[in-house]
Length: 358
Image 1 (cartoon, helix red, strand yellow):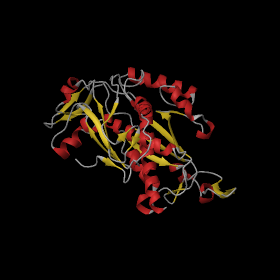
Image 2 (image 1 turned 180 degrees about the vertical axis):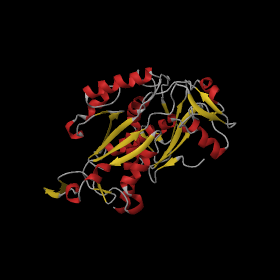
Image 3 (image 1 turned 30 degrees about the horizontal axis):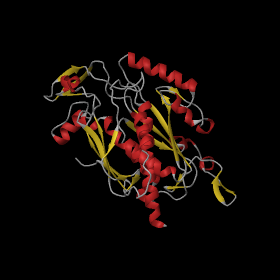
Image 4 (image 1 turned 30 degrees about the vertical axis):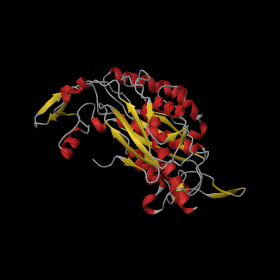
């Protein structure tokens, strides 16, 4: 199976399955001497871990990271950083009834068709548990970016029809960590939590949107033509499980405007070129312009619902099936750190690539 690596110079190769012994990865491109704060990395994993609230899956995993190589006395040595997170709370028996069943909107059928074999226990490699490796690599990328003053803030803005209708500049984005749905507006968050909990009780699932803002981005990140910064960010976000859409800046909203309404006019702030508005989302011509980069990531409702659905099995028979197991009624709260992690990896890679021109 190809497609298990992400990045050019800052690169993650991940491995492992949902119900295998462990999930892990190898990170390349971390410069020698980079401080590796393992407490910070673990805190990022804790934001993604299951069982953290009443509106997430009850699977009980500590998700403690174990580093195997590439770190000495708290600093990167410049060699590949290998790591593992052991799986402790698998219940593979919950999936015995779907061994030969193609769950609606899951990867069961496509994996079986492509490879002739699939790990039906929790979806195997197609499970979102694979994203643990992304969070470890993303946390190290964040440590690199923090040294440059770059910060990344993702938060939930939409759950179903419930939407946070405020500009991110009006919000204290740090408050997203003060509630279990990770929405920076307390009133909207409470409505989202109540709604998700009702969906959970109904044995169903719901989707929504995560917004991400990247601040203090230097001018010049991104490669023209086929390596545009927004294209790399889009690729990163669309690689996350359950993601169905990506837009940066005004996105599809720009289609309703005229050029004179959408253009970001330049002005001078001391010796620095700035834009009066930021409808471009901090990227022009595929290259960062120094303004905030912001984008939206659309997540579908997860495919696993605990209700009977019509499907077919591996024998080609049309049947009805009910899925068992422990699942998130809404992926958004745990997906926030994953979105941040993928954004951090893209930016860290872009920073390293940009140094080639210096």
